[in-house]
Length: 219
Image 1: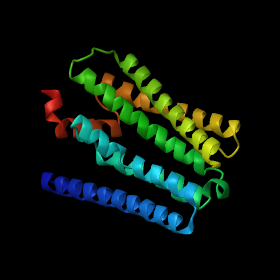
Image 2: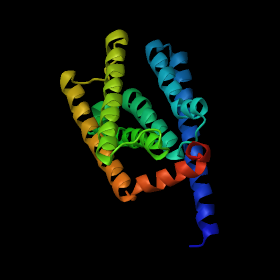
Image 3: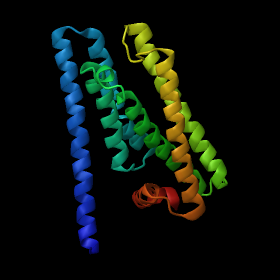
C-alpha cells in the first residue's frame, strides 16, 4: 500500500468516525426531545446530561488546545448512547445481562488509554521524569478513579431521580468496579509495554497520531 493510499484511508476513517459520532449525538438529542414531548421529565433531564457529556472530548480539546484521536470521541459517544438510549430507554440492561459488563469493559479500557496518553505527555516532554512502572501505576489509579466517579453518577441518578441504573444495587456497583479494575490493568500493561519497548499495539498508533497532531506540545 502506497503512502497516498494510507493517507486516503486515514482521512476517510476519520470522516466516517466523525460522522458516526455526530449521528449518535443527534440521535440522543432527538430522543431527549421525544421524552420532553411525552412529558417524561426525569428521563429527558438525564438524557440532556448524557448529551452534554458527549462533548467532553471536544471541551478538553478546546480548553487544552490539543487534538485528540477521533477514536476517543467516537467511543465516548457510543458508550453514552449505548448506556442511555439503549440501556435505559430501550431497557437493554434488563433484556441482556451482559450489556452493562460489556459497556464497562470497553469504557474502562478506553479511559485507561486516554489516561496513559495524558500522563505520557508529561513524561515525553521531560516535564516529569517517570519510570515505566510508575506511569503504569498512575494510569491504573486514574482509570479506576474515573470508573468510581461514574458509579457515583449512576448512584446520584438513582437516589435523587429514582432511576434504576444500578439494577442490583451493591452487586451491580461492585461488579462494575471489578470490570473497571480489569480494564484499568490492561491499559496500564499496554502503557508499560509502550514506554519500555516503544511498541504496544493500538497504543503505538494513537501516540504517533497525538504527537503528529500536537507538535507544539513536544517542542
